[in-house]
Image 1 (cartoon, rainbow, N blue to C red):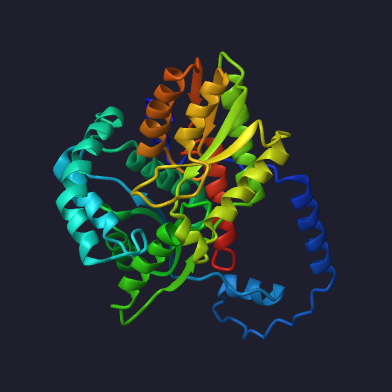
Image 2 (cartoon, rainbow, N blue to C red):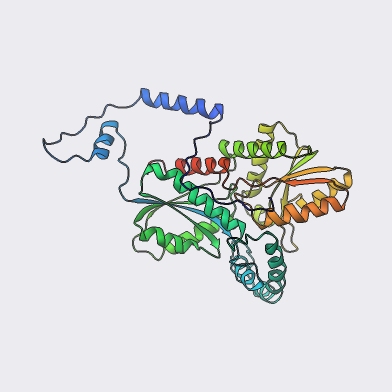
Length: 398
């Protein structure tokens, strides 16, 4: 949410484990103690004198645990996607792939395809290309979203390096490049027989997490020899996620020259129809905001939940961010801060839509000071969270 994109750090730089919230720590200690008191006695099998010993397997036999896998293990970070260039042709290719996904636009009718190809793609690609140029990482000639996601993967690889060279970390985008299929094929080519897919979406939605799984399974359906697969579930209420958001917001507020009267937690929008069909996204956004309020000691008037990035004429989840920003300014609010808890990395929706467009609307209608707090990105807090999630899902594999 700043004009300057995050840059990748040293991929091998060690990052320590964050202190767990007290309730979680006590629960883990109690569980560990209970388990220790009920460990069955396991007799190790006899080993012929002079025979070669598989030490990991022998150690596992003595403790009653499964031996770690010898084959390689892949970890694939996945995010939504971004165009390959800040020009209309690249935006057109990206938007066509994105808006042709039936998980994103569920009414795949002949009329929709005519509107998409005849009106939306020509007009929106030109407008979005101008927006991307405002935030483009010119040094690397790519979107900041791609820069940050790569940095997250590189840093996670460094963090997991002590586990051994058999753990391989890569990254992909659901739309555009690098594609999920290409990176999965690369992991398989390197000998990965177990793969953890990590969609970096804190709140589950069919249009995000599910479509990542769709693409993964499409590749697997073509394989005779499939790898074992795990998928990171939504982490909207994970204590480390809430703590990372809270600490990031607190640090951001301390650095500001003003104190906000209101803070908006703005999430990406969704058609209300999708929620009525059973999508849990809305309730998970609400729960994240509730937990963040509890952690910070804020009420609903201080930390408000809103939804941004509407598309089309249908009703989307409310309240809308830009309308709320305008209403607060007209009401007399002079100092406003926005955070975007649903985004794991800064992108067009945070760097331009929130930090530029919403800031302009706020000041145009009477507001004075506006700030957008950066996403967790590849910050220390963000990487501690990704490490924690990865280690939790890799349990039993490493």
